[in-house]
Figure 1 (cartoon, helix red, strand yellow):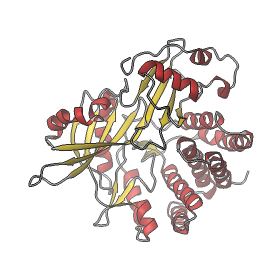
Figure 2 (figure 1 turned 120 degrees about the horizontal axis):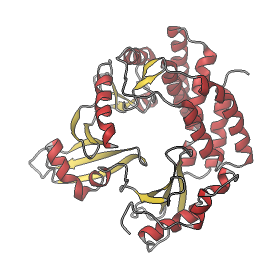
Figure 3 (figure 1 turned 90 degrees about the vertical axis):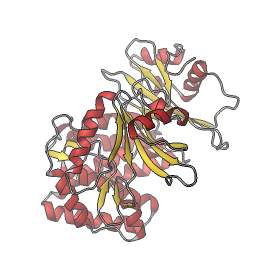
Figure 4 (figure 1 turned 120 degrees about the vertical axis):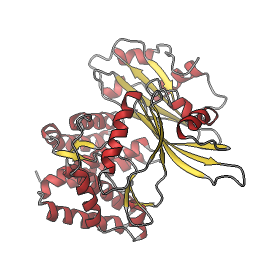
Length: 408
């Protein structure tokens, strides 16, 4: 059956549609049933995967529910993982699709497939490589994807080249390009757009040379936090974005809670409930205060060879709040300090926090709430990862959330 067509309605899927008063965990389509749905649509492979993992779960709403899975062949690296998604909308027949044939990202299957990627690359970027390797960096079903291209030419011609490809819904491309221009008005450098394909919702961007801020912190040659905050301040002073909506914190809180609640053991769900209850009022009362990055952290920033800071991920720039940007950065640094046991991240965290509080006159408890909220969202990482022991890591992550919360 072709990719993206409707899958047969399975009993497990019907139970989701008619869940009534069941708990989320009881009405989730389990990995085994999801794999059977996959095989009914695409055929059963010769070798069964070693694991089927829940990757993402969106809360039920007006747009329905998405449940994404990843089939892995861990002991067979030559077999690529398969990521597939079940879309459920009211009483409609559930639809199953798999990467890269995402019905909401019409350009993805073309640009993610090396044999098909050459024509648009030639037309819109005006390069004609001899060989092209494609690597999926990030994929959010129905929303966006990031790919890395490695281009090479025959000996004696242009050297090899790396670029990144952003794929989104076509109607989001104009906003993406406008957002890039707004980010470029700050003191941050941003990658140049090498070309774009409107109907395919695709933009090709240059690679920015340098090390991530995370790598620089690890190596001991990170820029002073004051320089980082200077660049952020210039972004916050930029033009307002009327074409962008502010982050929906209650939605993000609910989404994160539902995904973890469906997977954690009893002890983990108790910690989850404590963190969720403490953050609920904050999320409900939060309002944007002006332009912000909205996903700022140490792996989004490149320290270029000249020492300038570059933003390599800027698509969330829009209405937001400076404190939440800094809270997100602190959350990532706290996470790294705890799980890597490397004191360099804790030191950079402490320096940045102290400087931000002093420079902007923020209340420490308010910044702590924002850091806790961002840590709460990061607590999903072990669930989405492939490492063993994710239950323990998620429990430890929830401990970090509770520690960051101001005293009740």
